[in-house]
Amino acid sequence: MKSLTEYLWFCTKNKIEFVNITDEVEKLVKKSGVKEGLCLVNAMHITSSIFINDEEEGLKTDFKEWLEKLVPFSPEKYKHNLTGEDNAHSHLKRTIMGREIVAAITNGKLDFGPWEQIFYGEFDGQRKKRVLVKIIGE
Image (cartoon, rainbow, N blue to C red; front, side, top):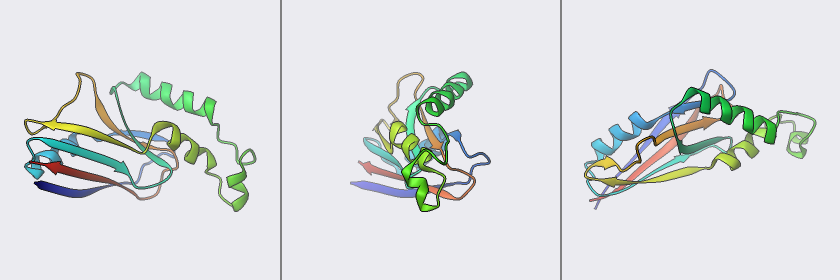
């Protein structure tokens, strides 16, 4: 069995941002030499997310607006912020959007539907954070 472990690093310009990382993950799949297996992509910070969806600007705006309605930025609203933080909303948004994805690798490529892309979701950005990419298979 082959395996590859790599880390992607992000420091977004904005506090909330969605970054398409599909190309970087595909390069790592190729580097791994795995033809049949699995690829785990995991946000390694509690206020960031990994998810699969469509690459479309309107949809990314919809996600931001939807998340803000569900979990608004409001430093006085959340108990977590009594600790001196102001990012409770970021923790909750991450929980909604998810921690990781697992994608099949078939014939040496990510086995996706026609519109599927991998995104890094940042909810408390402007500082350095990492994402784990773990590839296993034969």
